[in-house]
Image (cartoon, rainbow, N blue to C red; front, side, top):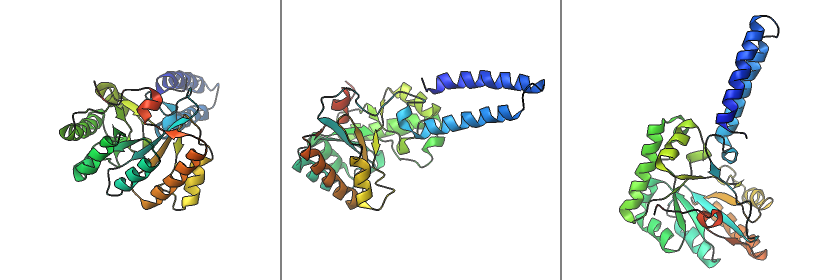
Length: 258
């Protein structure tokens, strides 16, 4: 399996063997360099492609599904425009999962409560959504996660179990952190790139060209652009009799601590 704990011992053994052979001029030292580059490449790939579950278990898709359900998810809220997303989802009888940032919950507590009141699931997206998330220590990641949980618990009697790392970055500190906090890491099978692409048609096509039941789709409830794309996606789903459910329902997970 393509996992960090499996890859490192293999590459380390090969590296030692290559160094010994190079020391006795059996092979070129360039083989050692190639192994180092391979390790860097695999680690980078594993860190930024959350679907690989390279450092920790990640739920990103439902392989066996009912043939009709998929999960729409939204990161980085709540924001003032989140209410428009909620209105739109309600009009299509769609449920979603919102991975909320702690500082944003503090800014918009009423909107946060509305998300829950309308039957959607909320997940932890850290307290600050630091751009340096990939460089935080395990202790710092734990603080980010626990601080967000505390903000949630100040408003509602819930402790989220679903966690999505900022930017989808995974690494050993994050893996250690979620092992301690006992959160389930939720990724995605389709990334809309709605915060990167400016053309709504391109965002829409990127989503629907591979969209199937069982998928988990990543959006952000932060722009009118995404709101317009979302409506087109909901129409596309309705035409096929597909339904959006919460990530915990799709994956048969508990969204909150018992």
